[in-house]
Image (cartoon, helix red, strand yellow):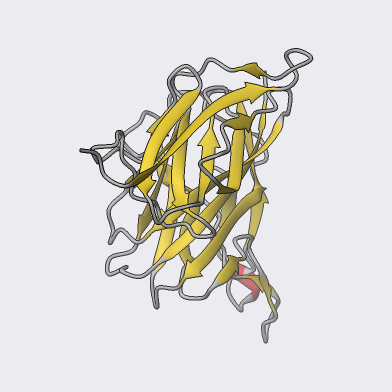
Length: 258
């Protein structure tokens, strides 16, 4: 006998392909099922018997199907298709069976949930396809649950050729809630104004740390043309040793290029 579970079933559709939305065939895109209005993942099941399913899920023929406890009546979905189209669907209910994908849109923002992991590089399950152009100005980090004295790195899985575990974000503080300012800031010094706090990684910027001395003013040069190659592709993150309370979101903007 099955458990008392809610069933969710979604098909990716593209309204641009015909007068009526056409189903998209996608066998490698992923969907992360999250608690509504929270980066915490929902426990999901693959059948009515309560067989635990992996989260994120992988699409089959552009469709996903999963079950939750019957107390879960809405979820958020973070989706990345095989072609790099990103969608974040909020407050989704079991009665909604289609996710609209605009395959013509070039500019994308991928939303990825983050969770404390005590100095272990964690693969998010989201892989950027080749041809995604990234800029440090389209990178965001939001802390929803703080972790005092701790930091986070975000990048591309170090085990992949060309990967860099802190290539996007380097040692950003997660001790304060809200949006984290990642771009280098100017500090007014006694001797000279200088570039101080910087959290942008080496894939997106070249940085020289500054100090309150004429010879070490520092500076940064954004790299606005980092293009994914489809080899170094798995987005990962690493919280510092001792992290145990952090939750948040990564906002990764990019442009899909030919």
